[in-house]
Image (cartoon, rainbow, N blue to C red; front, side, top):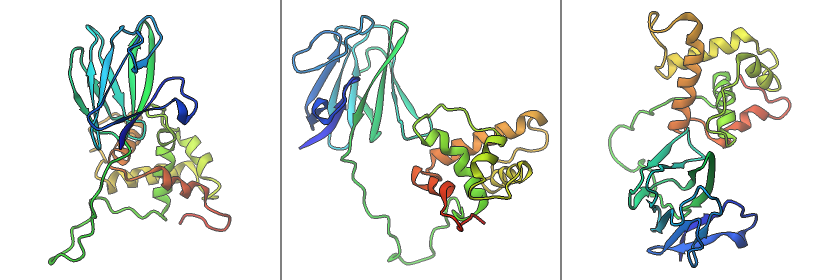
Length: 246
């Protein structure tokens, strides 16, 4: 059974995808490597690297003499792996990955999917003793969560390095579900989130003009790193008429 799917740079349909089973290898590079993935660019080595499939993850080998490859998690908070020149069989744990190759001033990429991730039940209700306290207690119907979702939205939409929205943009984005939103209320909720998630800096830790930007970056980084806000949660920014966040 196929466990890894490689999507070439110009692939426009499922027919162009390359499927490999656990234990199989797929070479990639500029030269046509019989049955491998050809990346036609003068800045890509003839034999650039190799992918080895396993059941729920894959290995990446970098055959380049001087270029580091980067494997990004498009669904994460900027998580990435650096695969140094000559590194063999580096494990990649992401379910969806983007392999980025620097090539003579360009950044080329192709995707690798490992959709066979397996999960066990996390149900602990049958175990004796006190329940574990939640790591982050967030009310998804609250206004502060809507502010957090709006902060995370650009990066959740597939742009891991997108700039965070300014307060004015947050006000505009939240207005449909929170008609009375204002700059001061957004600032208040950002402060509240920083306090609730224990990210609030002390009074002398940052210059006054930098503190809000620092808080926003810290909030988004924490929220995306620990999946406090997922793409499905963006529904709070499009609540049906008559259903406003409280």
